[in-house]
Structures are given as C-alpha cells and as structure tokens.
Length: 353
Ligand code: GLA
Image 1: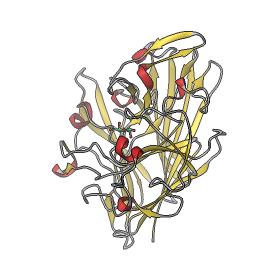
Image 2 (image 1 turned 90 degrees about the horizontal axis):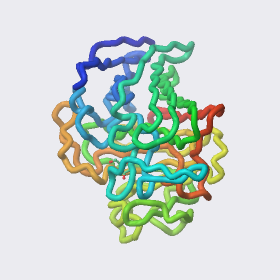
Image 3 (image 1 turned 180 degrees about the vertical axis):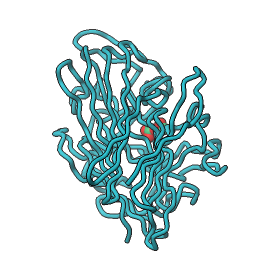
C-alpha cells in the first residue's frame, strides 16, 4: 500500500493543485486531486484480474476547472436541489445561488467541487488514505455559518473505497455532502451502462416535479420501472412511458434507504457488469441514494484518453439526504447546529463474479 503525490497544475488564481495516487497492490488504485476532492481515476480488477479505470473524468486539471457535470467531485454544501434557491432557518430567509433552472443545485455556482482542499496522506493497518479539509466561509453561495469540512478517502486491502465525511459549523446551517463519481464497471471508455444489473435496496423513491424538486411524498417502487429490489438490467425499463422517467429523462431519483434517517450503515445498492464481471456494492449512513444514469451527458465532455462521454455512459450512486430537505420538514433533517458534529460515511466495495 502506498500513496504518492505529484503536481496536477496551476489554478487560474496561481495556486497549485496536487494529484495523489493511492495504491493497494497492482490492481486497486485511485488518483485523487485536492481540487474539488475529485476521484480522477479508480482502477479495479475484472474477473480475469486485469485492471481498468471505472470512473469517468478528465486527464488534466483544466477539465475540472471548466464547467463539467461533477465528474468524481465532492459535492457541497448541499448535494442535489433546493427549490427556488432558498430556505427559512430559525425564522430567517436565506437566498442561495441559483444555477439549475429556478433551483439551487450541488452547492451553487462555486461549490465544493471548485474548492482547493488541504490534503494530508493517511495510513491505517488495512488501508491507505487521503484526508481533505476545506473551510466554507459564512455566506458562501448564500449559506449561513462558517463550515469546517473534512472528507477522508480510504482504499482498503479488501478492495473497498471508504468515504468519511465530517463537518462543524459556528451558526445553524444545512449540510448534505456527497461524492458525484460516474461509474462504468466495464471501463470509463466502454460505452453505455444500460447492460449493467442494478439492485437498489429501496421500497420507496422520492417522486419529483418537472424541475426535479420532490413533491414531498415517498412513493412505493412496486409496479413502477423504479423497482430495483431484485437485480434488474438498467436499460430494461429506462424508456418506459412513466411520468417520473419523463421528468428525469431516465433515472435521476433518490431511492429511500432509511426514511427515518437514523444514520446507521446500511446496504444501499449493488451493481454488476456481466461483461467484465465487476461488482460494486454500496453501503451508506445516508437516508437516500440518488441513482442517476448520466441522462444529461451528450458527448460534449471529452474525457480521459480523448473519449467523448455520451448519454448514459456512466451511472452515479450519490448517497445523500433527500433533495430539498431544507424546505420539506417531513424529510430527515439536514440542519447542522454549532456544537454538533456532522458525520456520515459511504463505502463502495469492489469484487467480481
Ligand atoms: C445529479 C442530479 C442530476 C444532474 C447531475 C449532474 O445527479 O440529480 O439531475 O444535475 O447531478 O449533471
């Protein structure tokens, strides 16, 4: 197990970003940059033992500096949408940056995906890691409170990628951190993910309006094309005539893992690519997981090795609280108050079959 560091280039403001390579043996590796906390590459073995890079991304820093659909990024302060770009907290109305139709998405115009995090290599008996820290100032993108965040990535000997998030604030605010990696278990350049088998351990999903804001109810997945309780090929029903698939242009929905939001580590999802044999299982402490099938990719993002990422060339499993929780009091709360430690974790396990 080892971690090495090299320069990833210069940001427009003259500061320097680094790229860390975390390796566990020859076939399990990740490259992570402290710019946006981006997982730039993730190499795992297929059923014959040969490694491929299974996350979408860019070869160079500029790709991540430019506007892009959050490839591999840490998303904050708030993963997913907040309706109308605002909320009332303790009787005070806060106005956030609006960057997605009428809504606030993924932390705003300059979210955590555009922050240069402080990085520090970590070691554990069974893992090699990278600790990233970022302070989001009071008023950042409209949010109240100065928020100190820490994200630790671990690559374990058992072929897991662990992501541990924590944060503290000096004034009441909302927090909902996630990682926005796009996976293709056949390789980032292997075309669409429609042949992958997906399992989502969810009885309910969060139905949304045309602008992808929750209606406020939870809807049973039963008898809908969003029922992934048993392994189902992603492409099998993605084009079915269904209001939710029409609004999402495919799957772009939060699946309910724990409606109570108890913060216990639970099995959320499992994906299997029959071609390569790769399996990815996801456990999370979050109440939900956003299953997004890369519906907005259109070939305009030219990624690693010059590969243009087309529609549905990757899928995301963004573990998170439900969208728009600041305006939906019946959802598990995303409020963080001074003196309380925000703590959550998600684990991606890799194996083959
Ligand atoms: C999330 C959202 C999608 C889209 C992507 C980024 O998955 O739910 O609607 O914004 O991020 O393109």
